[in-house]
Length: 130
View 1: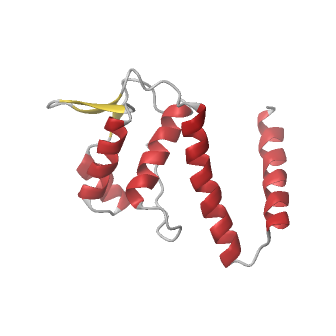
View 2: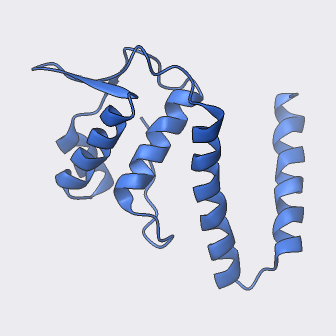
């Protein structure tokens, strides 16, 4: 499970974990029944406090994305089918906010950001054929 934490974007770390796990589930890279790393393992990998990962897992459990199996671990819920459109837009909104904040710090204006997004879209989709 690939999760990347960005400390400078203003989004709390536990929310970044939640959003990225939701994205992995929505994209099918994590499927129902897949085990997510134990709290301590993920905390060590991300170099964060285990309580941060525990909070993220609790939020994911409340959202029905993961479920705990006593003594066995935490797994992607069978009910964690692709996220609702509203949830997907919520995840994307936070990423767009981070992009715009970073662009502002780099003194890059909105038209340039939009041009970059269009260029990247064309590049990605020309490689995948989609």
